[in-house]
Length: 316
Image 1: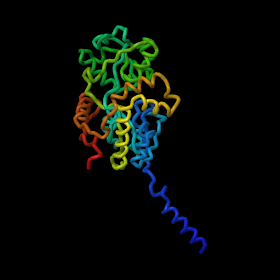
Image 2: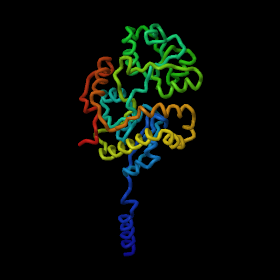
Image 3: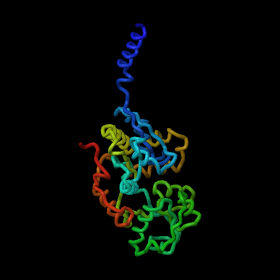
């Protein structure tokens, strides 16, 4: 009898507990890389309490392997991952259940990087030159589009895989240019090391504009309400960043000593104008144009419905 009464009392406490009744919804987010200024709205949303305002408890996880986050989301092991629009097209064409549900960085960051005082003053000068890259496939297609504008075939340059040592390979003159460098990082890194670089912006050189960083979810498993609230919180964070760039940098950099350096400070201010002001907004034409580009480049074998690639999940 005592056991029954005691158990009933415990159950009553659990039901009446305010912590249990108002617990935030848990959302797991896998980053594309270690935390850096590209992730500003996420970190500010956490630090300013915007996630909590929308009843969310967001677990932010940096990956051990940067290639894994979208695959883990597709497998139902996480709710959201940060990925790249070009990668989304390739993975959906391969059959992975992924959907772009929001945008973090709304412009390309990728650029064709050369030495500012070097022999390359225009992409036309790249014929018979060495160009470094880190990821095969998409970067070759981007480079081909740039070269084509100047009547240069991809066969008329030498591609060298420098892994992720893009700016070091360029500064040491191992290569004449690199594709895949981020304009907000590698360009600043070179300037800090007194070896100034120059970016040819690929969206001005024949490549369709695209979203550099996006949020992807598994459309069969996602919780639409949770994601909509997540995007609203990051939208508030972006507004705060734009209105308070210095204060937001102080908040962001205070979260880790590893962030408190000149490279991250410069990257922060260079990235601010590229954050998506409306993360949930859906530009289907942009995704159609880039799918057409990848298809004509031979990187995808078939096209899919744009609604299988991107959706405004805030609309029913």
